[in-house]
Length: 161
Image (cartoon, rainbow, N blue to C red; front, top):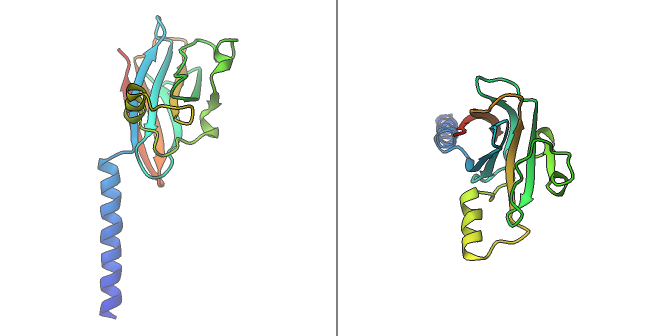
């Protein structure tokens, strides 16, 4: 009986330690931040430095306002992102815009690692990058990203200069 109790306590300690480790080392990495001249269209480059996929739950702007539209760009690192006020125009069609609900951010997509590959010339079309595109009717000064990783919720706020 004592051995079973010790195993249970050890399991709870390991599980709790893993939870706190993940909470203090969130897996979402912010990369490139770009905006239109009027800051009504913003792209925030994001990536996953964890070992399991990230699911974006919600995106809001400024004082937790709901933007007009939010999309996720999923492109290869050699193509990059587009900053546009309309994700359906002819130029934007060349970029892969997806609904936030339909995509997960894969592991191994750290923006800093992607930029390093570009710098040394080893980047390829297989290297995916992700960008949260926000379209709003007012100037965007902050983008709030709420996401889930291994069932744990996180919040990330990005300030747009």
